[in-house]
Length: 431
Image 1 (cartoon, rainbow, N blue to C red):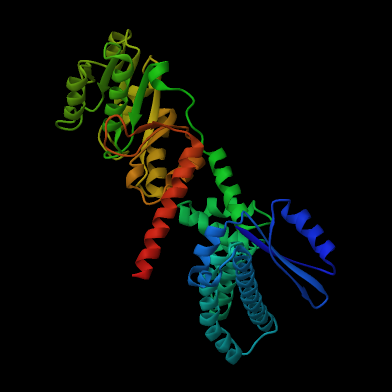
Image 2 (image 1 turned 180 degrees about the horizontal axis):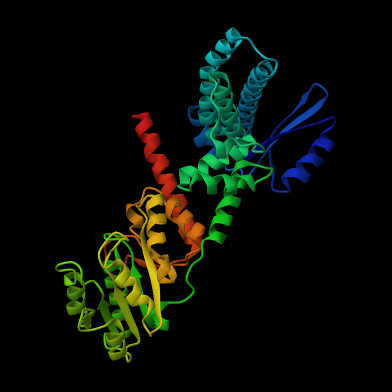
């Protein structure tokens, strides 16, 4: 619900302002004469039941809708007064700093910050009842934070507070980092939001993120072909192949599918893949000294879909160069995809990408989304590397927890995960 107050010399002029800025759906909560004219408090998307919930115990005294609306308007006026008071105090501190305040004045200012922060916290709680002030509160908190740094002699973090960033942009950058994006990408997205409300900037940034996240257009199971999964040990390559294979068998049968593994470097490395093969009645072939990858793929040329599992090697492991060379020099058209765990740190994701990008990566698969606290790390990674996301997995169930990737649902999932984390933190703070 959006609440706004209008002033004008006459009721007709005030109503004209309401119509122009709020539209025909605005509800008038209250109107009264004030010095210099009239005041109207209006709301969009007004819901009487929601208003009673927000007012809490105070709503008991409201026996009719008009009284309830008036109480909502009163709460709006009180919150606006608190915001103006805090803005004035922030302005005073800034002016004192700009005028070269004495150390004693700085000490007083620093002491005032705890009061300012308490005000902001109280107003944030009141905002849950009044609505419409999230952006102003975010701006205030950003200003208070920057003032605290000035008084204590610290400089603010480079990205959110670099020249040209206004308080809303700073708070937006902070929220994007809470989402899981890196400081550079968060700052870049926040700076594109030149003017307006924090929530508008948040939505705009999520849209830009969804636009920047590429996804695979092709359904492997329908299109067929040869696909190799590469990535570090534990990223979920073999399990993902099992999910893909199970989904394919359910939809198309087992006769046109084959599994291949190039992992000849670890003892019992093939066991899980062979288990999938036995359960699904699908052949599993192993690349070794006697059977090259080209030879095996030639024998499987009649298969509609071939999935290749690989060893989870790094550049320091024996066989790393050999495995990549096998994929690169193969005469068959192999579309290699990097498997990345959503639980990995961004630096690890980038390191893995550097290890495998010479394999001519066609895209990636994001695994273990259900285990990640936030998804911004993985989404930021694919945005920065321009890897197209073909699939993602969010659990151990085969094949239910395998999904075709789509940018908007992935970003929406990231927002839901952020809300879950924030809700858990709020509960922990209140305990």
